[in-house]
Amino acid sequence: MIKFKELDNKILLCYSSDYPTHNWVYHELDKSGRVTISKVFKFSQKNLSSAFNKEDEEAPVEFEVAVKDGEYYRFPKDILSLKHDLYVHEDIKLERRFFVAERNISIFPKIDNMVNRPIYIGGDEEDAISMPVYYGLLKTFPNTNELNKYVSARISGVLSSYIEINDDYEERYQQYLNKKNGRKGANLQYDFSNLELIKFTSISEKLNSMLEDEVSYTEAQWQEELLQIILLLYPKYIHAFKEAPVRDTYNKADRKIDYLLIDSSGNTDIIEIKKPFDKCIVTTRTYRDNYIPLRELSGTVMQIEKYIFYLNKWGKKGEEKLTEHYKDELPENFKIKITNPSGIIIMGRKKGMTHEQVQDFEVIKRKYKNVIDIITYDDLLERLKFTISQWSKTHNKLIQATGRGMGR
Image (cartoon, rainbow, N blue to C red):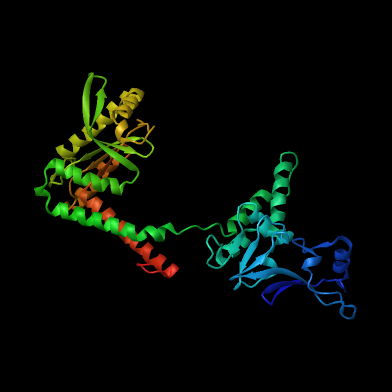
């Protein structure tokens, strides 16, 4: 048994054996001049603070392990087999598990091998390891149960190729690891939830403001303004190129795509943005009991389909041409790819449409879903509404869970 006590600005390690006496410690010191306690602490005669007492052979053997140094107790490196001294803050209560993990694994030599300076635990010293972090580290050391499961998993993994094993030890080991608390880093959701709320609320206010005063925008101005919103709503896209070149290989003519989107992997998509004037989505009258796409929607779909066709036919040569054309506006060594481009159409309002018109419009949208995403401005507003609501709930839950306020 090991206990620690403070005496005259020193820390003493008090060792008691399960045997009737502790004579072996004194005998070992007399014989070799050194003794190892608990397979971790290495002492010499100079560290000994007690003397053998024949009248009380069960009295603990005491060794000086640390001396006071400011707010810390300094443990000399040779006692713990370290390259650097160990400093432990005065407020920390010392016990055996602070130094020794399961199966007598000495903890500080493991840390010492990874650093090039003295180790500080607790307190305000620069680069000191805080107590919550240190005790979290202790929990990561494998216990006997985990080590046994690991050994069984490794053995069964080898033998299962040759003989039938009576259980899936590898699966049992993985299940055990899954139940353990994994490593936790900074809570990024908390750190960014308020920023996301601000971002999406600002986008919603901006879009509502634009829709209330759409007549004051030209088509080009509207597209430029809305494109900023789209790039924020679809963060996978890193750039949008206006009037991007594309080769019509069948007619041997050069065309221009209104806006070509490039994602972070270099893949290309096409977006068409139309001002939201009324009655540009579906007819007001039915044709054979169905509302059908109006000319503006059909024409925009056809336009995007042709651009996608041109891009696919342009292929590898097109990738090289586009990469060269935009090399000054893209990251170094970035390659543009043409891999089954898709399209986005933003146009029209659902506001004012009947329930039946909206239903038929959804059928039209799903017809092109594999290639083109048709989005109305009311769809955008609805997506923003739900996104803001979800981020608001997330942010409030995180505040309650962490006990932190908005203005930390």
